[in-house]
Amino acid sequence: MKVPVRVDAHHHLWDTDEREYGWMDGPWADPLRGRFGSAELAAAVPNPGEIATIAVQAVTDTAESAELLAVAADPTTPVVAVVGWVDLTAPDVADRVAELRAGPGGERLVGIRHLVQDEPDPRWLLRPDVGRALAALTRAGIVYDLLVKPAQLAAACRVVREHPEQSFVLDHIGKPDIGAGAGAWEPWAAALHEIAALPNVAVKLSGIVTEADWRAWTVEQVLPYARHALEMFGPERTMFGSDWPVCTLAASYDDVLSLAERTCVGLSAAERDRVFGATARAVYGFRGFDRGGGGGR
Image (cartoon, rainbow, N blue to C red; front, side, top):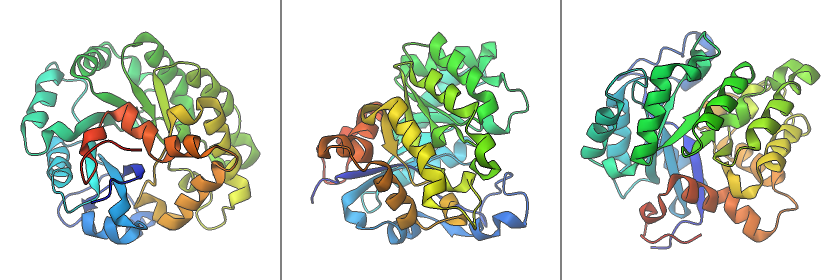
């Protein structure tokens, strides 16, 4: 089988009939209820045989992470790796990571994420117990995904600076409130510039359309945000992510992919290859997991 040439570095899988997702807290989330599994993902992506994907946790439950790892181990799905969840405030984070790695598909655990955006304390990432957990992730060779809002970017920047040996990925370009209009640009843009100056953090071109008005966003409105992220981090630290199925609140998978392609207009073929595959493979270290074997770009 041909080695996939494209990587979707951020999507979710869930079935709301099987598990509750507390953040789906109103009628706005009705389109997201139901089953969004690997079969539905394969139906949504163009040319599913030529894409590798990373499934990302959506609930604070290690059982979900174990289930995602089992999916990633199934060669019939496009999922090849998982960003899971463990309790970063627990004293035995290393043991919890090891337990996930010991289960089915455990070798495909490439990252850990916590829903920091929902934490009321903007300095949550700076807690001493979280710092100890990040040190444990560093020893385990696990990436940490930063899910933060603009008000939390200062703490994120500090934690990235304080853990120079840890690899970080900033999800959804730091979630600028694009729907708020011109006032969303700053201080987000300056904060993004500051965190991008640190070499141990990459960024995902993901989750952008859902930060705009779901029904009225335009490419012209959101493209400057995506291009600013790409300019700040460069192709070697930027990766595409669909944020499917959350993206479907505002756009189709094809629309999100098209936006990322528009963002990359002007890049060389090698640079586009980084954004749509090579960066994710390098940062998360899953070259050998691509369907069909091998690493390839």
